[in-house]
Image (cartoon, rainbow, N blue to C red; front, side):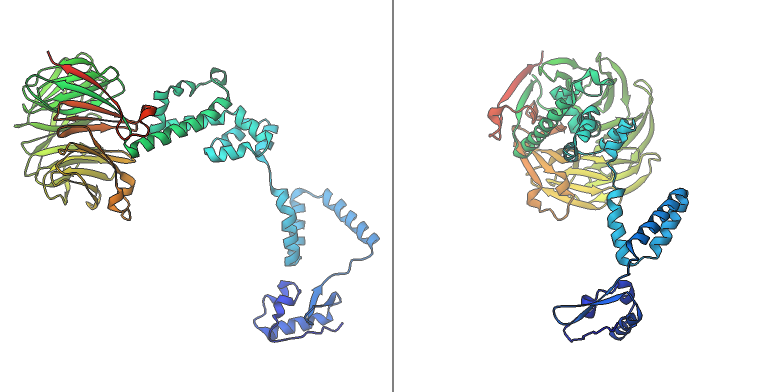
Length: 543
């Protein structure tokens, strides 16, 4: 058979030639390609097709023997094939495939693809392995779980009987403090973590609960951004002094340290004063409590340890020469700092067994605040510096420089340190390298208190304002400075001394002798379109 090839300058031989790619793919140039095509003349299975533009297309085919012989030969091959072991069958098929051309490989691949697909979610229960199918689908997020429900009735059955919406909500509650707090405040935590399915509602209950939770969370986030809140006010009017210097709270109570030398414990629901602890001879400047003790520091230079339940004084530590300005304790270690420029590190075996381990000296002015974890102790001073010390050895590590005036507050967690200063700015630092990551400007006077979590920084200042900042944006060097402050809250009529916050509220104290509770969860519907919400006030008059 003669092959007639027409070569034109505008025709691509490869594009019009139907010779298997394995023949021409290795050709280096047009001449070699022409030679390869010419060699086909001697092949009995080559035929030519005329293309519309006048060129020839070459197709390689193999003549099938008579139909009867082919069928007999095929049946015989299948008979032998069925008699072989699986390994022999695989080896034989591999030999067959190796003798095929590229086109045949593609055809076989298309044939095998659907055969290799398995609906394992449907197949597993048929083998009595429902729990495995449920476990696999339990890793899906909400959007994927919705899609999985629509695959088929069997998938929907596995999701429903496996209570996967309940498990998704439980996973979020275990891993996200916002979900955990919301479950407790909204009451749906009572339906979670039940050992027996019969103890709780059906899957449909959790299926409808999930979007309600998401809506609740979106509303809370919107309230934070827009400053919508329900305000509660505790008036701590004392006869001889004015000012609430420090506080800490939980779900049941607020414990505050006052300028009048007392510690007052408030019921967080009724806002009534439950107990007054007296003993300090100076203003209570700092405090921290846990489930057993309250530890307080005062301008009388002492640290006192109180029984949190009875209010009894358990211990008094006399070490510092001037006012104790701040303290922190955790896991058997306590750190205190003072106007005397020193930092004291204490071993805290129990409330009555507290011994001085080391005194850290290096600051050139009053040490206003300390914080620590297992790796570092961090201190800030009126000398404009932040110093980092090793927790285990108490050795000095490095100094963070940048503030233009004294530093009044800081918080340290992981690698991040956030500090506030009398230069009216807030700075974010990487503790490992000492670099300043961002400077936040907006307060008009000294930044007195600061706290942060994974989302926000909340600061209070002597200008009477509380500002909420976007932490993630602040850590992004590309974010414009004008976008960092989310909201400014103005209710205090005096300097803001201390604040603490969680996902649902801010609690702050001030020189105006009030404690304010800014509730972003329980905002009345009437206040959803307002920035400031109606407030409830409770006044306490000391006896």
